[in-house]
Image (cartoon, rainbow, N blue to C red):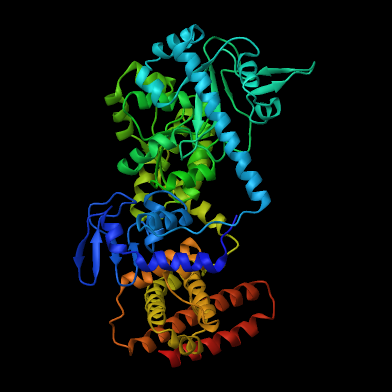
Length: 596
């Protein structure tokens, strides 16, 4: 499904030219002018001191706190949680600019028709189950079950809860009479096929929970048995619409509260999420009983980087928490754990106590390291030598991930006291672990990295200035690349931006915030936004040569370090090639002396 490129590009340019980024952003965020920029508190993360900046005449925004940036369309896509293309259409509608018709292939039309029919069928099934619960005698058992769990009519309506009647063919018979084919019902998992022939309803005598996507479209169902039968929970099978790795139950209802409160609570099952919501805890989603996935983490991150896991406190739940924490950390989320006491799940706890008690658990949530320490203390007999060794081996990789020396020192003291071991021994074990982790590196590697990192900040500042300069004066690009080739820029995003600008200029293409957004990755585009927003182009022009020299010198220092480490490694191995590395080191050293 695609637009004619020329028509589409003209349309986007017209919308962009007609858009006032300051007016658009100010309708969401209070802004105050300071210098050339307008400043406000970022709408994408919680902060008290404004770090969100808009430069209207450049058409860019950037947050120096969470590092989101871009043009007016990027802002709308983030704030409305829609795609970049949908943001363009939204702005066009607001400006009363006609949206061009799309050219659809036969395959596109067929797929669109199929998806629409699947969504409609899920809506029909949701209505069938909901009416069964609220308007028939079949639903009385379901209503009693829900009321016993503290779920009232308002919550039933909010989540469109339903009930699957007893019997093998109530739904299939009703739907087939309405002209719905067995093959379509089978495709979305509402019915199953008997080995002996014929079909049966997949959900029978269960409370039905519709599972919706972020746009509140029903894409599947969960069934909770009200008796002692197994399985306790039954979900729709994987379909064109229903992929458990991609979905988070309740996100359509919770996303506003997550953004406003700047954290999300992840529970295991949809009944936990419904129960907490019924008690006024609205920033809750459920991972449908499956392991927390990278895809789910990315969805949550659109609303807040802060994720609080609240899984069951049994062994399986705690193991799932450890896996979930590692996924969250890998995606730079700020992960914490809400610990439910007495072996209960969130639903049981809040029904026994009250929302205030649950909010106290939130306030006392554990960070990444504290939870692992708590876990090892609960699962290991640390009174024995074997238990202490096991605990230390478990906690060392976690402790080694802490970069802050003050924080690391505090945890060493705390862990030593908790485990009843000598603090010096703990420090020695941590040092040994870190050494073994980096055993393949030459001895100079750590100090070498520190040496290199000192140059990074200066080089980054210089590179941002240079990119800003080229953005406003494209004719400088050849001069810059002749002095400092793109590969000498230490920042990957900066190299990407340079190559983009070089390509646009050589092909006589337009270079603006729209074409940049279409050609750069999200990371590179955000960094370009920073380069533009961070400094207006009013610095003295003779700084360009100074900054180019700074970038080249940074590159030489890193090259010097790389060849020094290589020479050290080859010499230790008795490889004569280390002499070639020494010659290169001397050459670089001489060039560095000349550059200083």
